[in-house]
Length: 145
Image: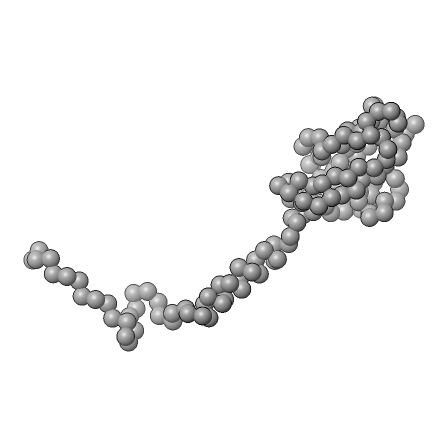
C-alpha cells in the first residue's frame, strides 16, 4: 500500500508538489493524506531547506491532522512537511511561513501616533537655535577667572 498526499485538498494546503502555498504563524493548517499502515501512527516533521526542524506531531493514521504553526516559528521560504508511517515517507511541496500580521499592519499604528504627536505640539525650532521668546539662560559665574 502506498502512502501519498491526496491529489486535491479542500483548502489547497499542502498540495503534493504542484504549487507553493503559505502558512501563517499562529494559525491552524489542516493536513490530509491517504494510505500507509492503518494501525501505525504517522509522525509529522517540519523541514526547512530539506533539514528536519523537529517533529510537529504524531497522529493516528486516519488521514488528517490539524497543525498549528508555532507563533515564534521563523518566517521564510522552502519549508516542507514530512509524513512518516513505518517505512512509508512522503514530503509535501515547498511552502512559505508568513507572519500572522503583515508588517504594514504593525507599522501603520506607530506612524499614526507619531503624526498625531507631531501635529499636537511639536516645536518648529531645532535644539541649539534659539528663536524669539526662547533665549538661553546665562551660565552662573563660578568665580574661576
